[in-house]
Length: 231
Image (cartoon, rainbow, N blue to C red; front, side, top):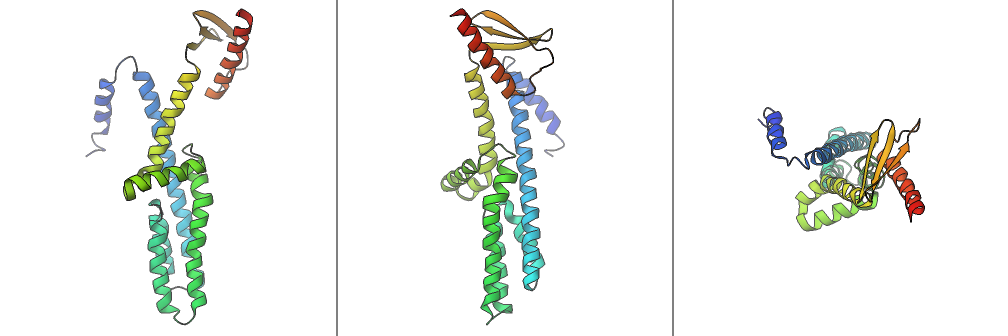
């Protein structure tokens, strides 16, 4: 029902937006949507890679139902720690029954999940999830720790998307702070700045800034030159 009414819900929300801030709110919402989409894609990739790894490793050891247990452990890995815990309990319990007396194979099964957790925590999640949502590995670990400590299991589920959304808003606020008192736009292939009620035109020629960072750097350079000239 939510999918059927989704367009109408968005239309109603759009009508409620204050006109003075509607463009900014839509821009932030679109960036958050892009970030959350990247998070979902990253988690799907992590789950698939872990599922293939666990299934392959357990099958090579010779564990019965290792393929199924490995795939389950990988697919449930979107919930932090639960995939490895569930898969580890099932696999080790089955290994104790199947390989009783041969504890080297049981240790190998245990090692598969230890290596999987190290691989996920240090490489997969920071690279495929953290980078895609704009979070550094330290920020990712901090978000999981804080949300997990304060909100428990639900906090672990919501930590990364909420941290990524908060990051989008913080980056916007920092950008507004850095450009406070300045207005920027393009007119007749000229970049113009309004600084302290004075207008400064910058010919773009062939060099057109293609990102916010390039525009910010250009604005800062020209603002410094402007300040040096008129002060």
